[in-house]
Length: 150
Image 1 (cartoon, rainbow, N blue to C red):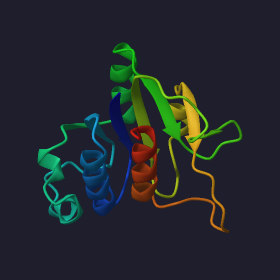
Image 2: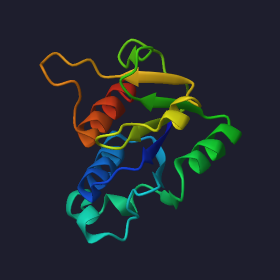
Image 3: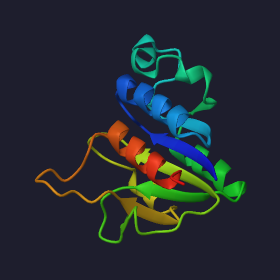
Image 4: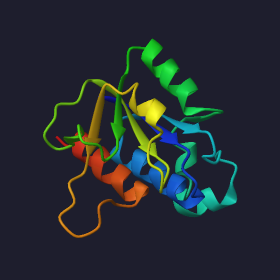
Protein backbone atom coordinates (compact mmCIF):
# COMPACT_ATOMS: atom_id res chain seq x y z
CA UNK A 1 0.00 0.00 0.00
CA UNK A 2 1.15 3.52 -0.83
CA UNK A 3 -0.21 6.30 1.39
CA UNK A 4 -0.04 10.06 0.88
CA UNK A 5 -1.16 12.47 3.59
CA UNK A 6 -2.62 15.86 2.68
CA UNK A 7 -2.86 18.43 5.48
CA UNK A 8 -5.47 21.02 4.50
CA UNK A 9 -4.69 24.20 6.47
CA UNK A 10 -3.74 22.57 9.78
CA UNK A 11 -3.07 25.50 12.10
CA UNK A 12 -1.12 23.75 14.90
CA UNK A 13 2.53 22.95 14.27
CA UNK A 14 2.30 20.44 17.15
CA UNK A 15 -0.45 18.54 15.33
CA UNK A 16 1.64 18.52 12.15
CA UNK A 17 4.66 17.18 14.05
CA UNK A 18 2.58 14.47 15.65
CA UNK A 19 1.23 13.43 12.23
CA UNK A 20 4.81 13.10 10.95
CA UNK A 21 5.63 10.76 13.84
CA UNK A 22 2.53 8.65 13.24
CA UNK A 23 3.27 8.55 9.50
CA UNK A 24 6.74 7.20 10.18
CA UNK A 25 5.45 4.76 12.80
CA UNK A 26 2.68 3.31 10.63
CA UNK A 27 4.94 3.06 7.57
CA UNK A 28 3.93 3.11 3.90
CA UNK A 29 3.60 6.92 3.83
CA UNK A 30 5.26 8.12 0.65
CA UNK A 31 4.78 11.87 1.20
CA UNK A 32 3.09 14.47 3.38
CA UNK A 33 1.57 17.45 1.52
CA UNK A 34 1.66 20.56 3.72
CA UNK A 35 -0.99 22.89 2.28
CA UNK A 36 -2.01 26.50 2.81
CA UNK A 37 -1.42 27.71 6.36
CA UNK A 38 0.00 24.32 7.40
CA UNK A 39 3.53 25.00 8.61
CA UNK A 40 6.57 23.82 6.70
CA UNK A 41 9.09 21.56 8.44
CA UNK A 42 11.42 24.42 9.41
CA UNK A 43 9.12 25.43 12.29
CA UNK A 44 10.82 24.58 15.66
CA UNK A 45 7.42 23.88 17.26
CA UNK A 46 6.85 21.12 14.73
CA UNK A 47 10.01 19.27 15.74
CA UNK A 48 8.95 19.23 19.41
CA UNK A 49 6.38 16.58 18.49
CA UNK A 50 7.94 15.19 15.28
CA UNK A 51 11.20 14.34 17.09
CA UNK A 52 13.11 13.95 13.84
CA UNK A 53 10.36 12.20 11.85
CA UNK A 54 10.50 15.05 9.31
CA UNK A 55 13.80 13.48 8.16
CA UNK A 56 12.11 10.11 7.68
CA UNK A 57 8.94 11.06 5.77
CA UNK A 58 9.27 13.20 2.63
CA UNK A 59 7.14 16.36 2.52
CA UNK A 60 6.47 19.39 0.40
CA UNK A 61 4.63 22.64 1.01
CA UNK A 62 1.89 23.75 -1.40
CA UNK A 63 0.28 27.19 -1.52
CA UNK A 64 -3.15 25.57 -1.79
CA UNK A 65 -4.61 22.17 -1.07
CA UNK A 66 -6.18 22.16 -4.51
CA UNK A 67 -2.69 22.20 -6.04
CA UNK A 68 -1.76 19.04 -4.10
CA UNK A 69 -5.05 17.31 -4.92
CA UNK A 70 -4.63 18.00 -8.64
CA UNK A 71 -1.10 16.58 -8.56
CA UNK A 72 -2.32 13.42 -6.81
CA UNK A 73 -5.25 12.97 -9.19
CA UNK A 74 -2.90 13.29 -12.18
CA UNK A 75 -0.93 10.36 -10.71
CA UNK A 76 -4.11 8.28 -10.40
CA UNK A 77 -4.14 8.34 -6.60
CA UNK A 78 -7.55 8.08 -4.91
CA UNK A 79 -8.51 10.97 -2.62
CA UNK A 80 -10.13 10.01 0.71
CA UNK A 81 -11.15 12.98 2.84
CA UNK A 82 -11.62 12.50 6.56
CA UNK A 83 -14.67 14.56 7.48
CA UNK A 84 -18.09 14.35 9.11
CA UNK A 85 -20.62 14.63 6.30
CA UNK A 86 -23.98 12.99 5.68
CA UNK A 87 -22.48 10.70 3.03
CA UNK A 88 -19.25 9.83 4.90
CA UNK A 89 -18.50 6.14 5.42
CA UNK A 90 -17.10 4.44 8.51
CA UNK A 91 -13.32 4.18 7.96
CA UNK A 92 -13.27 0.61 9.30
CA UNK A 93 -15.94 -0.69 6.93
CA UNK A 94 -14.45 0.19 3.57
CA UNK A 95 -11.75 -1.20 1.37
CA UNK A 96 -8.81 1.04 0.61
CA UNK A 97 -7.13 1.23 -2.79
CA UNK A 98 -3.46 0.33 -3.21
CA UNK A 99 -2.64 4.04 -3.61
CA UNK A 100 -4.56 6.48 -1.44
CA UNK A 101 -4.26 10.08 -0.30
CA UNK A 102 -5.82 10.82 3.09
CA UNK A 103 -6.90 14.44 3.50
CA UNK A 104 -7.13 15.88 7.01
CA UNK A 105 -8.61 19.33 7.53
CA UNK A 106 -8.36 22.43 9.67
CA UNK A 107 -8.93 21.75 13.37
CA UNK A 108 -12.16 23.80 13.56
CA UNK A 109 -13.35 24.24 9.96
CA UNK A 110 -12.52 20.72 8.71
CA UNK A 111 -11.70 19.90 5.09
CA UNK A 112 -12.50 22.72 2.68
CA UNK A 113 -15.79 22.12 0.81
CA UNK A 114 -14.02 22.58 -2.55
CA UNK A 115 -11.68 19.72 -1.65
CA UNK A 116 -14.57 17.54 -0.46
CA UNK A 117 -16.14 17.92 -3.92
CA UNK A 118 -13.01 16.37 -5.45
CA UNK A 119 -12.88 13.40 -3.06
CA UNK A 120 -13.30 9.86 -4.30
CA UNK A 121 -14.63 8.96 -0.87
CA UNK A 122 -15.33 10.70 2.45
CA UNK A 123 -14.64 8.70 5.60
CA UNK A 124 -15.12 9.27 9.30
CA UNK A 125 -14.21 7.76 12.68
CA UNK A 126 -17.36 6.86 14.65
CA UNK A 127 -17.59 8.62 18.00
CA UNK A 128 -19.10 6.72 20.92
CA UNK A 129 -19.03 9.51 23.48
CA UNK A 130 -20.52 12.98 23.52
CA UNK A 131 -17.90 14.81 21.45
CA UNK A 132 -18.42 14.67 17.70
CA UNK A 133 -14.75 14.53 16.68
CA UNK A 134 -11.17 13.80 17.72
CA UNK A 135 -8.00 15.88 17.54
CA UNK A 136 -6.69 15.81 13.95
CA UNK A 137 -3.37 14.19 14.92
CA UNK A 138 -5.16 11.45 16.87
CA UNK A 139 -7.50 10.94 13.94
CA UNK A 140 -4.57 10.57 11.53
CA UNK A 141 -2.89 8.02 13.81
CA UNK A 142 -6.00 5.88 14.14
CA UNK A 143 -6.67 5.80 10.41
CA UNK A 144 -3.02 5.19 9.45
CA UNK A 145 -2.73 2.24 11.78
CA UNK A 146 -6.07 0.80 10.70
CA UNK A 147 -5.30 0.84 7.00
CA UNK A 148 -1.77 -0.55 7.44
CA UNK A 149 -2.91 -3.38 9.72
CA UNK A 150 -1.92 -6.86 8.57
